[in-house]
Image (cartoon, rainbow, N blue to C red; front, top):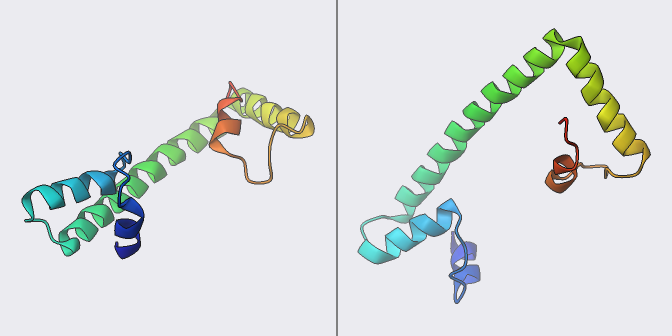
Length: 100
């Protein structure tokens, strides 16, 4: 939190969840750093659950639909062979894979 505060000085362009909490904290002064950490932790934990459920459903339906799985694997392998994918595939690279 201290590092965030140092980096934030003079930069109000951030719009992430922590930035919104910090604005609220500065406005009314009622939210402690502990409260901010608590809200962030809850968001991360809740988000990881939702992500896990979504991924599980995606993999389930891919496995249940062999033609969809084969098409997806083909798209990924082709993109990799063409050099369009890095070792750690980025979000921007994923956006260029229409079937994915």
